Structure formats: structure tokens, C-alpha cells
Image 1 (tube, rainbow, N blue to C red):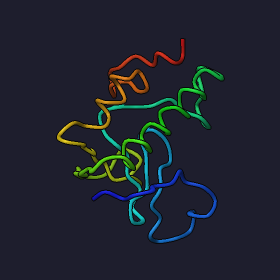
Image 2 (cartoon, helix red, strand yellow):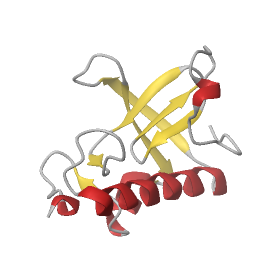
Image 3 (cartoon, rainbow, N blue to C red):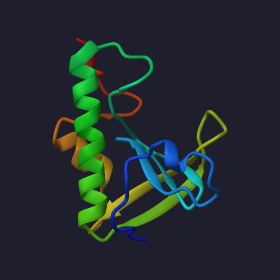
Length: 122
């Protein structure tokens, strides 16, 4: 389901039923569906910030890297139900059989969820 030129979410995509954009390094909208990528977590840039400007910079880098991965490659998405908030569909996105979460973890832009160390908080 490759979507070329997938933008970072902004004010212009807020109220449309076909919203398709990247929220952050582990969350995106696809065709109006809020997707939480499972099994990994990226730093926060807006809420629950524990690592100050270092975390914000890392969150920005994780978001940009997810955007580059999705815009530069063919990818597939597989869904797994709803997350604990009851608002987002859990999913994985794979590029050539590799989970994008594993790519972000290997590049030190994310941690394994739920047991990985929030290294950006230290």
C-alpha cells in the first residue's frame, strides 16, 4: 500500500475522512484510519517529554526517518486490532519483509515496546 509523498500531519489534514499523513515516528493516518505501529516506541515531541530538547530532536529525526522510509520504498501494512486507548488500529508496516520498527530501533531512533529502555529520558 505505498503512498508516495506521504506528508507529516499538519493543520490541513485534521478533519478529513481520508486523512493520510505521518503523526510521529510510530503513529500515522492512512485513509482516515489512525494507525499505531506496534512493538516499538519513539520519543515524544509534544507530550510526556522526559528528555527535554534531546528527546524532541530525536522525535523529529524518528518522524523524518519514517517518512523517508515510507516515501522511498514499497511497503505493506498488516493490522492487528485496536490499541489500549481504543482509538488507534494496531499495525506493522514492512519493507521487503523487515518491520519499520526494527529499522528505527537499529538506527537508535526507537525502542522495543513495552520492555525497551527509554534511552532518550536519561
